[in-house]
Length: 274
Image 1 (tube, rainbow, N blue to C red):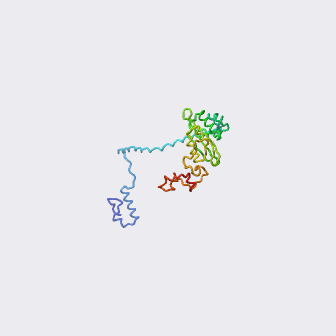
Image 2: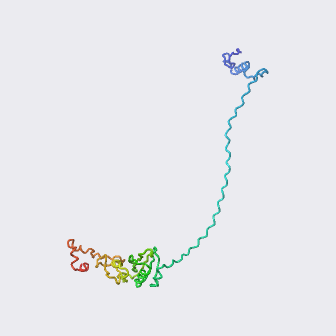
Image 3: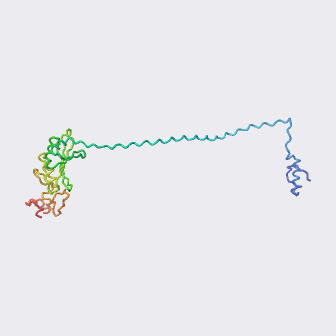
């Protein structure tokens, strides 16, 4: 067997290079045993200094503690019991409106009159033959001394007049009284004029006559006020039909040059002589 090399005992030398693997393994083991490779270390002698004590291990950083479990949620309070249903309020019994202060005086004239309050106004329906007496009582006894308006309505089955009365002295009479009179739907129904009580009724009654055909007995000069005297019919009546042969502007029949002279020809009605 070749001499043991002075270097690494496990180094592959030329003398064992061509040996079979099993033989090389045996030589490696002998070299290793000779070099002390693989043996347990010798026991330390009593005189040998004791090895320095290893420093105490550094304690590892404390791992973060796991979060404490959440306290169980407090139970939700039980829903309050539904309140007992309130009893249905008792239906209010509307008491009839007391009669207005004007009624005793007016009922003394027309005991069977009808009345209602509309928009704060006291509206009284009376017969046509009681109109003048009721209007005089309203003016002299109730303080309604101002006749504001006279209007008429065509309801097809009847015509109706409405007289709106107020008081000049608002402090003593702040209300409004409406006298309503129904008339037959004939061509020219007749009712008494109020011009003896209120001269200002003059033009208002003429307008009602002109547009609605209602005549007022006792009027000082009842004639048309908006339309010509020979105008056919009353244009605010529901049964009114326009006569297209009637010329509203009569002067134009005679041309622009003579339109001022033609009406002075003496003819009473251009419509009748067309």
